[in-house]
Length: 239
Image (cartoon, rainbow, N blue to C red; front, side, top):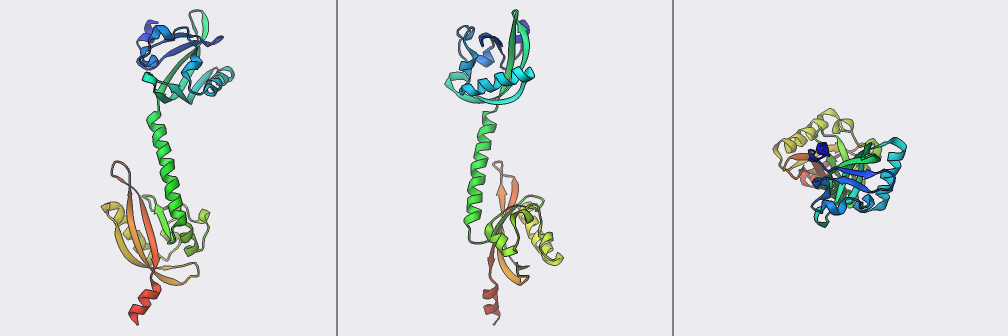
């Protein structure tokens, strides 16, 4: 017990045969009276009883648990996401589970927000009536919409991970990449006119808006581009 009390991380010891809590420290109790928890059922700590069943299944088959993500009842009535690890030990003469966990609520919330933002971005890209692409900092395509695929005459799997060098002659690709690097390095959007070849191998003139994509901390994490075909307009201007 002395050794367990010296550990600042949440510690929970539960009897293997009946699920009774034999030991719980203050970090695991989360402000609840420890005396009231000793002898209680560990299943009550889990928001979803199926998480407890998954925990038991892994302990029975592997004699250990590593990295189990579960919703548990935290301090002051809060529900938290926990990354649970456990080992089989003997405690007070009883075969028991010694468990600890890390609060990963912030990470899970961030992942959920990212999935929502990605879904919204993909929906925008899909229904935009002009070609739109997103590139990573190495200038590889990581998101493209249907209008861009139609412009290039390629399938999605033939676009992701590629660069302008894969679709355009070296001189045109160099101009595209130069503008890309300016946006990434300056963190500022830019507008430019670029001659590019379309799906029919016709040289067209595009008005391109390039813009940085920022992380929450203000750093540039990607680059977006939107294309408008202005070939006919430019031809009228010439005549």
